[in-house]
Image (cartoon, rainbow, N blue to C red; front, side, top):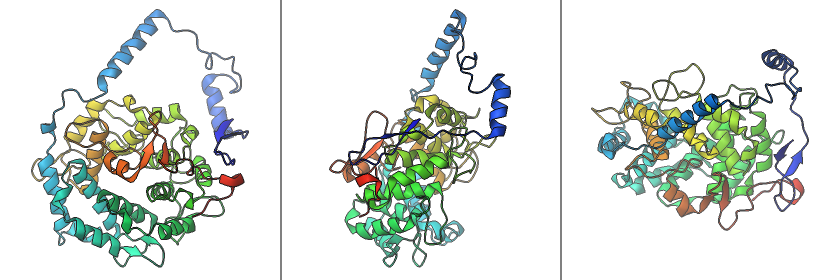
Length: 420
């Protein structure tokens, strides 16, 4: 039995006596592989013999070489085209006649968040007009609904509500947020049937939306506006046999969805729901020979997965399962040396999205000259500290604000939904 979200007021966990029933075909495949009934724990598959001296020596050699891959010793700040990246992001935000700008109207706030956070990580948030940006964000507010739209005259959505909150956090303008209205918006998005979070009033559910709602509610200090225990149960249903997570129950494991689920579980103090070994192995397998990471097996590497994979490993305390130097070389090789910015792969066109996630991954690995970033909130750590959210040092679990760190597990008062 695994621990589950408890219903007691003191937040203690209760034992969950459920048993996971394997799909019959999968069970037969596993039994054929190990050559014994899966419940026969006496089989050598479950109790392997002790390692020989030669195997012990090989294992120690692997551990030694693995340690050499962790950290970025020898990488210098000049390898990163910082000034060119700053100018690229700034130029992208100013050229409103560019086809890229016109075609991204439907995700404007998220694009702004990527570019602004990239600038903050590089220590150059001062190159943009903060008042103009904050004014635009507030014009995307939809008061009748309580959330933020991606752009003026669009519908409110939880994705862009998170982007709005993150942007206001970057500029230290959180007082502009109508926290109770946003909390009510989040409450309205939780499905009664299964606890899943909808993106908007039209009803689509996705693990991305669950993460967004959990992150927003923590950042605005309204952790109980959704039933976090029920969200945890729904996320748990999205877990696959390989340890990964999909967009919904039965969905294919995908590195982006893994981040939303691992981050969401961390926000609920429920990282014990993660199959750490299987998921850690699956994530480590995303690193290809070129050094980059892909999002699914047999796919090409892409800079954005540097963040989705590495942040998940960071939350799980397994960042050392990735070859940092190889990954850093891949990201740096995706820089555009003529106009700045970072592309998905070497020699492709750069964009703000991959520029941010490339810098964010380098930040997690401690690249010189880049501010540290929080792997759960995807915000610079100094912003998280200013807001007051905090994480335990032991496993990266988010436990909420310093003054209300016991209120974010949900299910208080005998398991009833906690509301604002």
